Length: 258
Image (cartoon, rainbow, N blue to C red):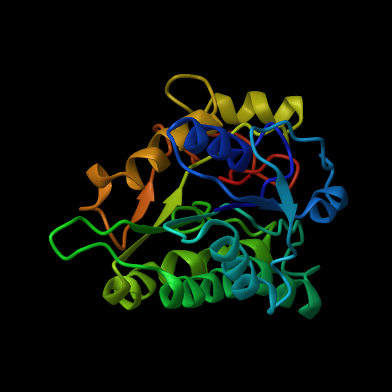
């Protein structure tokens, strides 16, 4: 299962295509109304599988979504939680409602996905590597400040800090959990000024791509990746968020997001 699918030029859509090509039966879901609220908007997605609609901000949805996948396909082995609520409000601007919405969409939903996944997963035999995988994404807020996006940064910080605990809790179900910080990824959200400024902070002079993220995910969900567990993996391509002249703001952010 891959969540957060709503635009073709994004991490989630690339993961769906990559995992499908690798032989997985992929259940894809997204929530276009969130992207419609954002400057980049939602766009039609052309993928080899149908993209369903699930609002993971609703507390009843994560568990029901897991059950839907099992009912349709008989089992669930991999969950890649790519969805996130973006929020561009400073400390002075953020509201209690926005804090709650980011917590619900970005953190609570993944905990509830993990809870239900553990209950329904059919573990591999003890002499086989664990076949269950749960992956989610943080955004580099543990490396540098993101004070123009307080609700987003705080919720992403929670995702970072819960990784070891959720992985340990999932171990009896033979599910491995990891968290990825992909660094800035060019998914079409940045304007030209931001794209050029951030590209200059990479040693190769380019942003990360969704395919760069998919390379790591494909490894982590394979048997070869079974030895990595409970880790926050900074896969940023050498990004130096401190190598800039002017302050990074909401119009010029240093974030790893979809």
